[in-house]
Length: 290
Image (tube, rainbow, N blue to C red; front, side, top):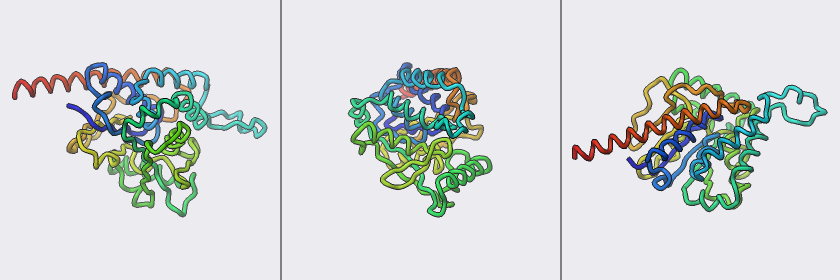
């Protein structure tokens, strides 16, 4: 099976499973480097998707492990002292630093070889950024728990709007990084961002598995989740969902756990390797029967 499209779910630090899966699948013979032409993502999946198509998975992992090694905790309580003039939560600063260290000016030409779309959320007009984030996450969480765990509909009914950013329109690395960050805004951990002069929030408030970005694309789509779902995965035409073979232990907002990042990546390697091998066996069986 050849995948023309890839959709990366959001999920913070858990998204390193996707990067491991991508690397493991390629190493085991699945032609993702040459076959994939379209990338869709939201939240931290945008950064992971960028690392995947730039073919620097291990570099991205080691870079973020280094940053998290130097960050002893996820909440810096000492910064409640206004004299320190440093953030209580280090996530936004670390996320931007990681992107600025990783993405180089010459990478834009490589990224532009793909059609890349990132999903953001427009909040209801009557809510502020922080309040809308709390409302959106609450609605999303309730629907995931009681109704639709993968593709919720309630946030849109509450007034949240999907906003799609075209990464190919970015002329500079700075613009590209701003777009990735705008698709990843979850106040207060990651502050509200802007896209085309509009305040935006994490696209995961609309759909953390944004297959809607690939709905008009031809060919097969590989959908990389970042969590394990106990319910049956969707069986949709031309879409193959993959998920971790076991629950990922690192929290999505854990930016102080390099060992957890490594463990998550290695689980992805194992799962991607297994997936590619199973696909090869299926392909050989089909040819033999044909």
